[in-house]
Length: 115
Length: 377
Image (cartoon, rainbow over the protein chains, first blue to last red):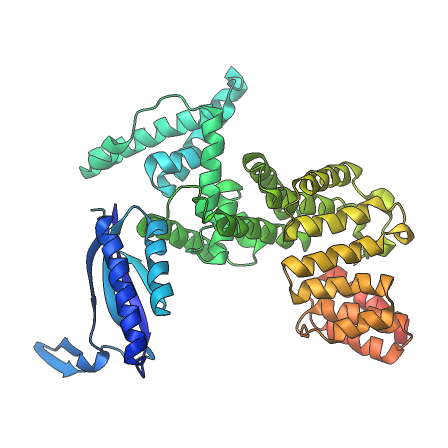
């Protein structure tokens, strides 16, 4: 089995209206239940937007914290799901379900090493 | 190769092992004679070589794990070899790999071309191609792309991807690199044997064979010769017959798809002993069917050629002028020919100039330049 991160790619800008969001959230909960029943679910949470982000970095010998994401972009990672499945094909199938529910692209990234 | 990739789970280990095994074969077969199952011999030898190599490395680096993982050899059956090739084909053509990487991997791992040969065929430096292959193999390993024939639900889409890679290789060969066309046909034959129940697989093989059958007639003195002007005695009758037999097999299945229909169109050409005897009505019907299942501007352009023969040149020109294919040399070449036949010489000359500016193929250029001169001097 391999671990994969599914990164939900979200455009910067307006959020969908609450009634549309409710339907999406209900469907996402269903996908999660299915993954849990298949013992594929490891972890998953939506992230706050880049406006809530703080970057800590080294400048000379001093560590400083600054406001904002590490890179400005038109898209950001809106949520992370970690699954444990057989291979890339299985991971892509899960990602396809998320994409159908949210309409958002999903980046599928393998973790290093086997479990 | 494919068997070993699965045994070792690593393309590089398998590749080195196969090279070792072939080196051994070159040393031993001339003296001892070839073994009864050469493929099985290579695999068994390669596997033993790989185990030796991994043990040596394990001893050197204190890495025991990889050597332990290797199952010590039971003999390998021919049937297993075939199944493994199919798995490897789907792996090489996985949609998670970039198209260029799929083509390169297929030629390297299934076609047995060297990295240098593939680099030459695609006009990139060998180092670039080597890097592309390393990255692709790395992704297969790291992303966990499986060695498996896809499940039923995914099969049609994934098979389309495999066929597209093979046809792309074939078309690279059409531009004069014969070894690629031959390799594509060989891969098409392998796939047709492994997946004989898939009519599109047979359709693609038929299409390639029928196009290839005209190779000897397609050029004269470095100039492209159009289908209508080809010396049909130069067509390879064996390939025509084989292609047409495959088309008939497809017809019996009655599950038409784009490759089968294009093969059928080429089979109709193969029936005509002289260009004037071509059954253009049937060809036009087939193009209509093609536009039904897989509409594309390029298919519409080719259909226009049949329209010119059945309905008239004016009608064909109207079809062509409605297409948004201005970047494509063949669009201008076909348009030029229709204008020439309508006696509109200046417009035809301008269209030939457009076509000439959009191809670098010497044979096509020679043809277009001669036609350009013939309309306007």
